[in-house]
Length: 568
Image (cartoon, rainbow, N blue to C red; front, side, top):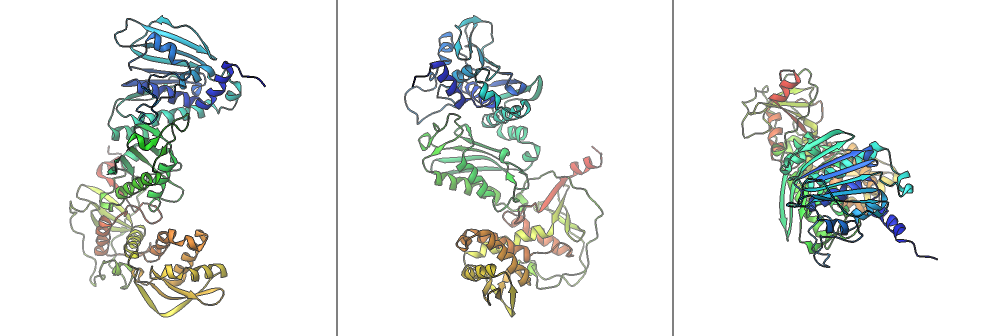
């Protein structure tokens, strides 16, 4: 047994802090932000493996500070031994020596008022003396040949293109956390972006995309010393991964699992399965309520009361998402438009779900012409029905709205059932109870869940080993098909696993029910019925998406329509 030499120890430790070029970019940019930089320029070559350069206009370092900066566990960011009230992004004193141990590091820095800059170099952990050098006020850090001193780590890096993507993502997270700072990123001599200092909305638009910018719902909330602000994008703007989620805690971009879970739960009822929401959230809480010294990467946190934080974020997001369709963002989706069918004059048969939801009985006369759009109605006035499935409306501000009538009415039915769940949903007894044949396991699960289903107005009981007897359906569903409804509920219970998990999935069961009580695609509506649907959407929470997370409507402004026709 022997003690390892210090140089080897430093190289081993470097792998914990700098696992890939993106980590080096992150650490260097964090140093620039801590130095008070107002502009940061990052240049990468070969995905950052060949070269990384980070230049800033911060307060710089003196010759004495430079000499200490490349030594392990030396930092200017902790005034004492208190690891609770940390106000900087960096504080461990590991980044620069770790980079210098794994690659070739050069730092040129000049404090304001100094006659010249100073330079220090580290290669594979070997430090060169500090020397005078030309340089502008601020700091320029260059990293070359990363991991040449630790070939085992370099061997497992991905392609330069993939490493560049990781580095760009790390810089974007920091850019979103500090929107007031100007950022420039170039890769192999090609500028990817050059952003000025901006407000949060403009920075989100620049880094999250214009589709997200058009769908951003502002969010402001406070509770028990915690404050949450930022933007929650409407659920119709989703991503295949959670890469569109920017989470900042006390100015620090994080990938904390508590916060990611909170976002997922908040969107669970309104976003399509397999899609991830887009959010940009800034959470502020007292420093003694969290521990940032959890991992060398400093992207994970430990909250003193994670349940309180999670609940606060979930409730705040749900409030932002609960506005009616009239408050939904104006997303610029561009569908392919075809022939618009005239409004049907055939009245709808009575007794279906729209009557229970207050649409009123269908008029006996032919559908009348739509009134002029009212500025108080964001979804406008119905002018036509397309393919007996979509409602076409015109708004007072000269936009066109296209509504999926089934998806929209499904959400209205869902919310109506949800509102009545606390007091119990009224059931409508069937004149003749229906016998529904099912696999024995599903029939047994339905019978076991009967007390919970009764709260939803669905009364079932066992009827032999492979069937259930349906005595009542939720009154709010109107003349729903008991066979299809019960089979769908049985499928939902099967997805729950154990029947004891039903209480946590009642809302999913309600969503299944809502689909059966909604206006179907292919159902002709009168103008009055279409206008009634639009008004209900404007007043109903979460009406911008159906129960499965699909959008219920899209909106095209006059300018967007003119662009489609090449008029602009």
